[in-house]
Amino acid sequence: MAGDVPESTDPISLARQVVEDAIKLVRAELAVVGSELKRAIIQLLIAAVLLIVASVFLLIAVIEALGALPSGLGILGAEWVRWLVLGGIFLVLAGVLIYIGQSKARKAIKRGRKHIESTLKEDAEWLRELTKRSVKGS
Image 1 (spheres, one colour):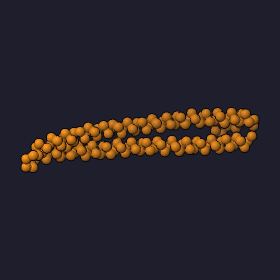
Image 2: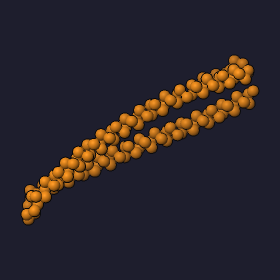
Image 3: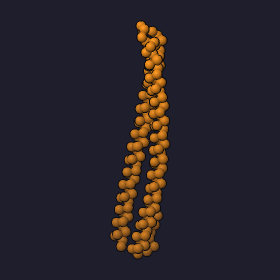
Image 4: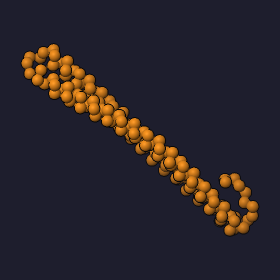
């Protein structure tokens, strides 16, 4: 554990303590990485669901817009305008959901990558300091 004072100044026992601390660190880091990955996966699943819903809305928008074309062949009648407006509403909804889904996916990936990198850098520095102390102590 961090803060434990070694019972002896024997280099072998100090090295054993360093190895035990490193093993504890690796286990703790694996737990942290696992929880970060779980959180990132959940966020990616939410983003995927939003993108699927957006795809459905996009399909409906295309169907609505295509449904408006035959009615619109005459002089601008009110019926085809309503169909076109409904298709446009679904198109806007699909665009908003695509934007939100992509944004969430990018943020999840970026946050996970930055957190893991910073954690690994901190741990490497801690391990360097720990080994420097054990070398100076021997």
